[in-house]
Length: 416
Image (cartoon, rainbow, N blue to C red; front, side, top):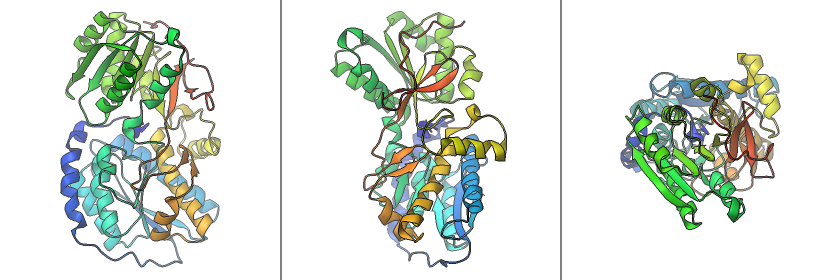
């Protein structure tokens, strides 16, 4: 998300993302006929409709979002609800389908007559879903759709619940490297980029800044989504022997990149993966003890010191069991969507769509993923945290104001 995420920056971003741009163009048709705002009752349960990928390509992350939404509802209801109204979630399965997500949100608004809606998982589904919400004048707080196609729609009802747009996920790594004294910076860099509209731009943004600062590109390879064996790509990287390796990756290819460089016994001084390495459970499961020193970016993880994080973890474990290190950041992002509704209600004494849209467009709003504010089209104005695997845990290492450890460089040698 983190999903970047890192969805954003998030794990398990399926290759369906390649069709987002075309879908965005088609979704404009939904705006052709505006409808009247919801006339829901201000008493009784606060009904919130959500479409999630409980089956299909995005089902793992969809279920993580469901856990976050359900946890928020149970916590807020135990404390008396929102303005005294108990929250009632209506969650329906979109099977990871853009067509189904349109049907789901249309039915939730026009037939179930929910008071509010929250977003689905992925930009692929957020684009058409947000158009439906806009057509009916509903606010659209969404935790997992931060690609360019989402904000290119220029919708004023949308609010992405992560610190920054997904493609900004590498900025914090570039900030860290360029903060080093010139004599301690890497001299050369190599880039391995997944050919999708979310991964490659992250690495490309880092590359542009590095080159402007004099860090020479010695390897630059973009590979198709269907690439399973990363050994040829990373063999070229190893031969070029850059000081810093940047992977513009999603999850599976990030794991494959790391596995390949371990086999090649190539150990760069710095190694950043835009996604995959920010998955607290999946990354160590894929690469074993070879997590040490790998960088990524994130908005939430188990050792986060953000206010409310410890209680979120405690409540999560009480409801679902397991261990804090295995909590998917998507759950924290979805939980944070609910926190925003609570805060608007507390500030204004109202919880209708027009009030939510107007109110969130000003000020800064504390959540589990940081203090959020947005531009007029719902793109967050903040930045992600730089995290690094240190002693087997994801740890914030930059910026210094929020770091829990200084960055470890050069990267320790692979465990083998």
